[in-house]
Image (cartoon, rainbow, N blue to C red):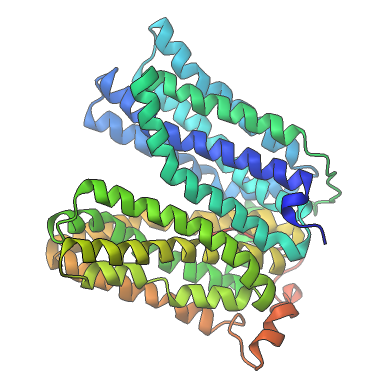
Length: 436
């Protein structure tokens, strides 16, 4: 089988996503700086601007999955989403140069780009299944996750440099151009989609079918439960971790940025390792192993002590490991969902899981901050480590758990428990969703 790196269409899709993600990471710093430095935004306006970016996921996340499952062709919609996002982003520097840029303008742009991003994610998931052979889908998702890891670290640094050189509004120009380049690359893909979507029974019933599939099928239910558990406690940890590292561990802010960079490097390492481990042992076993080691960095932060060099060394090592673990989990989760979900439901199941695992993040952050006021920072961090560790129960008590030796022979080529969709509902089809 031709390696992914030698498949022209996959390279185009991967390049498109990498460029687009990097541009989006630049705008995460450039847009708020534009609002603060040029438009004198108030705290309330900054809160609205932050919320506007994530609001479309809550409003349209589930419906976007139903729309994705109705489409005969996904690529034209992906191209349209990138073009709309690019046009919206380019209005920011244009409006600034014309002297008409306002906070409501930035809010409208954030809503448009956020809505397009929600639809793009919903549509791109089943498109990967059409573009990449089944045996290479986990590797494909690992490549996308590696790009995100690098962009999330390099993007803010690039944004800071651009803001210094060309000002914040013009830095948003990079995001607009990145969307347009992504659309151009997507247009170059030649693989033809040949799918016949199941007849729609109405948007509401289609969405309900995706929800029902996600909680009825044992494998999908386990992945959903594990993803929600991990993201809830991870965000509770994120809410207090920087404060704890600064005030309790005494780690300078500059070194905290370096530790984040180690996590991004770990993501690249994780993508490389996941591709090889999943091919050798299967996604089930790699997923199980990644969940077992998920709490390692949080435990290290909560328990480490000693001189500064030792604390930074320990956290650099565990941060790198966690970056790899996150990519391994997300890639295997996506591969398993894609593998064990009927084609007709991939869009809806993916949207359901994205809605759940992303939606719970705000609840986790609120819980972490509130508990820290009551219990203190260190107890909350240790509680988060224990909470994430419980995610293993979702996997261990599901059909994903390896049950008969030898593990390598069982997990290498044996597909995990086939879907018994007929016992769940009529016209069943399941959709996959990548975590993280």
